[in-house]
Length: 114
Image (cartoon, rainbow, N blue to C red; front, side):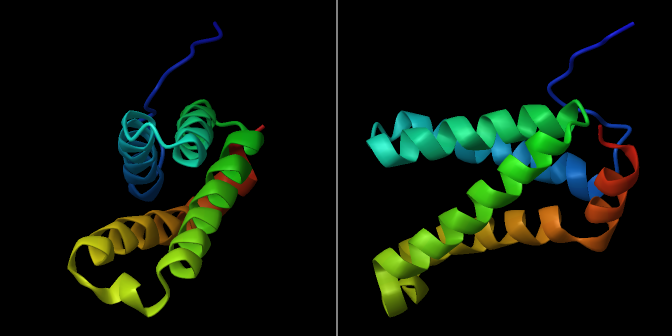
């Protein structure tokens, strides 16, 4: 049986939380109605769906989008990224990158993803 899912709770906790953060960030990006953020939102949602279905392309897309998002945030705001409203975005995006690149997440995707 080929079952598709949006969240796979059989995965390690780091990947489950990362998948949830991918979806939350995707929703906020899409509702912002900024064209570049809509593209990020679509990439994050597709990456989360790929991770939930244990696809290597999903993990790669999620990591690339999350890392590029942090880099763009740092480039766009510079040192001002440490000021109040933007630092929250940096913290959540940094946490997403950390969860995706955690050794437990990397090992699981290396062994089990197709």
